Length: 278
Ligand SMILES: Nc1nc2c(ncn2[C@@H]2O[C@H](COP(=O)(O)OP(=O)(O)OP(=O)(O)O)[C@@H](O)[C@H]2O)c(=O)[nH]1
Ligand SMILES: [Mg+2]
Image (tube, rainbow, N blue to C red):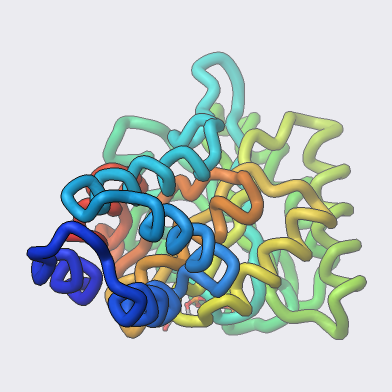
């Protein structure tokens, strides 16, 4: 993440040269801002005195972000339900465990729902996490209707007086329409009993601009309320979190940076931008 910072550090003249602009554009694209966003940022660089450049760019990126609340919306009066979505392998199940662990440590009682019934191993994976965190989990048989598992889970969460229900879902089905229909059905069945407070899209930070296209598909189909960007410890370039938020105008709420339970943190644009640009 240091390359953009190094770029600014070497300035000593007052006017940024065309060569430097080209270099800056390449760095932004390497950092996964995407071409359109990179060009918008470049426009600011063209117009601004070097001494103010870093600050101006950071300010303009912040202005382009979502204004919706960044914290998970947790009700203090009734069951809160969090639906976890995304394509396969992005880190959904791991993120379910991380969020459950975080909320449990903050004193909340949690129930997990293993609604990825597409693969037997998916249920085992979440069950293992549930045991490690010591939280109850509702599972169904392999190939059971995910919506029926979700329905049982919301009933169980209410009976057990859980405060938060986190629903894991499949990322891969026979086709996209199938997946969206299934998510829609889970949502309908659960909402009849208790509202869904968060629909989080899990974005693998290493998938680049393609991840943004996936996020758009999910947002159009089910209206996501927040984004979690995972794998920021790997080859991910940090611009992706800012680019997806700008594109969808849906807040990045959390970031994942490892396979462990505690490798999750709130997304704070100020410190994130500072890291990226200095
Ligand atoms: N380095 C790193 N690895 C992660 C992170 N989050 C998840 N992983 C790993 O990515 C792989 C896939 O994670 P899962 O949580 O199983 O992903 P999923 O979206 O549930 O996958 P499917 O259920 O197959 O769709 C696992 O090996 C995780 O340990 C992260 O933030 N950083
Ligand atoms: Mg999974």
